[in-house]
Length: 368
Image 1 (spheres, rainbow, N blue to C red):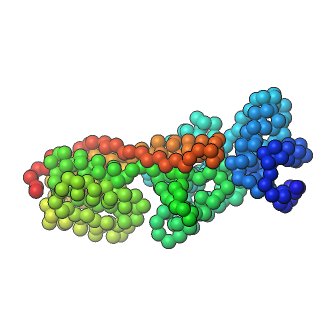
Image 2 (cartoon, one colour):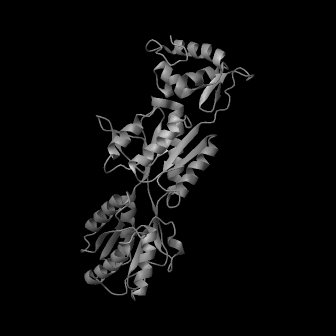
């Protein structure tokens, strides 16, 4: 059996042998990190945590953040407090994600855990860099991450994430990995159903030509388009504008917003679903400048509900359950830490809600 230099321990160890090894080494060396023990033993961190949990329940060791140490006056039979750290890597800290983060933070605090936050972007290399820092520094016991799942390097990134020595939960993403295309633990919004909800709301108000504007740079756009296509086909609606536009902060948006309004006039569209809020607010402003009244001439439903209520007029919006997404992600991670591989992979899909405001209503003219 190896010493703490990291040499091989001689193959797989039986549970009793692992626990005896832990007790012997803790007595001489003090606190050890779970991930370090797992590497030495050649087992998963989940296996080590299970052994530590059993020893702590017997009063033989004391759990500390990210590791385990010898008993320091803890009464026998009492499980000392542990403070697991859950890492979170998100692509933005200033739009959409703050409420997700708040939900994660609140649930972590309620469950006696700590949230470690890192901001990244939608780039594969940036997400990997932030995750590598967290895992390499031993700062976290589990990881919540919103990686790119499409495009160059995305599949390799997901495979790398699933091979990490800590539980990983995808947030607002879903993916499969490995030779058998196994699902990765995840929690996400059903954005396609949210888009359907917007179309059916507008249809219920009498609109028949209902267009769509989505941001070309958003990973959510594909799901929103899917839901819009599904609803318009199911309702047998006539053709309406479908525009993949630049983000509102990009130079191309000024051209795209006028193109959208021109298409609405040409195709007699009386309603639009616009992803996201920022594009929707900008579009309404430009429409009013061109003499197109909202909602009389053009009803608008925004998607995200970040700032829609502050627009003039306040915009009806589809609101994803962002806070619950964050809290559910932490719950999944902590449950995985507690139970390891003893429970199935969970894929949680949550529904959005519609917040009706002043930007929708019956069309001023009948359009068929």
